[in-house]
Amino acid sequence: MILDQIVNFDRYKDTNTNIKKALEFIYTHRNDEDMLEGKYEIIADEVIAFVISKDTVNEMDADMEIHKKFMDIHYMLKGKEKCCFVNMPEEIDSFVYDEVADITFFKSHSTNSVLI
Image 1: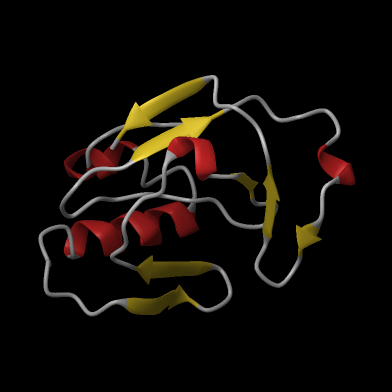
Image 2: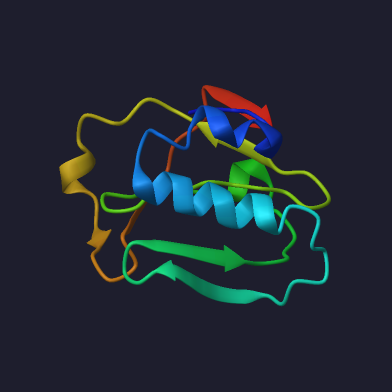
């Protein structure tokens, strides 16, 4: 996990073309509170931005999630979000994986968290 500010995206742009495109999208819209919610395909089937507004859930009610194909980059325009994380469980292959949504949910108590 990397925690940083979007103004520092130059640090990461040369790591991978897809990461660069995702961070450029965020940087371009970093102050755009009027941006319409929805799905934005930046590179078809490779870099997708989901612009959403929602209430966060209580930590005790939340499931952990893992992605195999994609990675999450969270950017908050307003408000805050507590992101919790744990070490990858050894039995991860026994959990149900949704290939279409690229996600596995599992129950666990967080060992660490960060406020975004």
